[in-house]
Length: 50
Image (tube, rainbow, N blue to C red):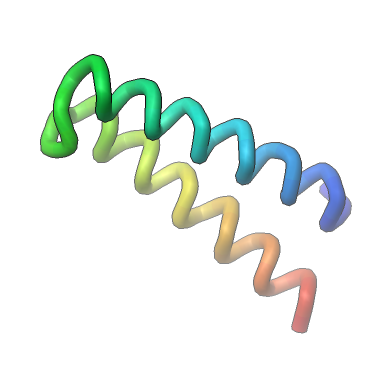
């Protein structure tokens, strides 16, 4: 996956996490899973940037 596609996926995941946090609260399993996915995407983006 190229950097632009990763960036778009990062933003979508971020928006999803924000929506989930409003619906379920910050400590819900849904938000934590989304946060972990976001971390992985950011790590992949940074890896491609270096």
